[in-house]
Length: 121
Image 1 (cartoon, rainbow, N blue to C red):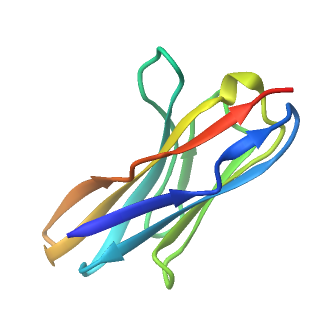
Image 2 (image 1 turned 180 degrees about the vertical axis):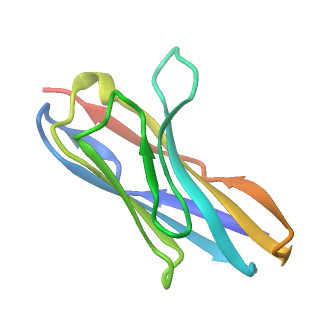
Image 3 (image 1 turned 60 degrees about the vertical axis):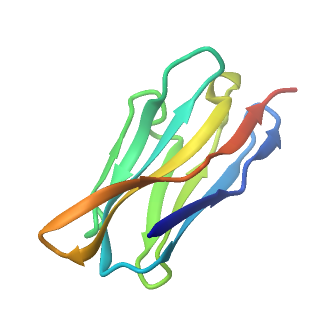
């Protein structure tokens, strides 16, 4: 079983910064692509950005130039650096990861429970 735990959320003023972390633990051969998603109150969950095992990144248009995803494969950890935060960035941020447990031929997607980010003055 693989567990993903997010941390780093909190209350921040507009134009402030936060850094989220997602740590994977459990028994697995390795991690493939990982991603951050968010869900604002009353809205559906949406993609924030993804990062492959080799470090290729993809971002939603709404966060390009403000958010940066990175990962440390030696620590099975992914990060989300969020700058110039806006009230519309408020929501629960979830970590997603493709983990390979039995073999490299078939991976499964896992989700964390989320961390709340509130951008407000």
